[in-house]
Length: 171
Image (cartoon, rainbow, N blue to C red; front, side):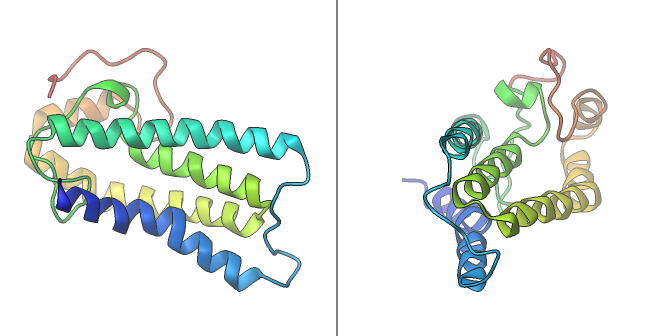
């Protein structure tokens, strides 16, 4: 059992997907922005199901890649993986884990019919975009050098490439 990996998952996606949305639901209960479950229509339920499935798939896939190809470490910035991973979804987009989290947040907003959770998802994207540009990406360039710089030039941060990038290494 990989305790550091479990800790990273409980803290990071746990905060974004469980703790903050639960706080939002609690703070908005009883007012015009209160969450409503089940959704008013099958459309919200099915759309949420599609977003949740896509998000969960990306999150599980990226955690699996970190656990099997990362050479130790976790997705958490306080214990990063040792290997530069350019496999699977990382050949299409630089942040598939967070895209998965964002897709799941959209699912939560749809299922709960909650504008405040949707606004939280937008804030989450803005916060992470700033964090990546100012902190994580410069650290990755220091750790992995030109390999990461080339990857960054060829693979977008948020909007996936249609064709997988074939440069870089495989682990």
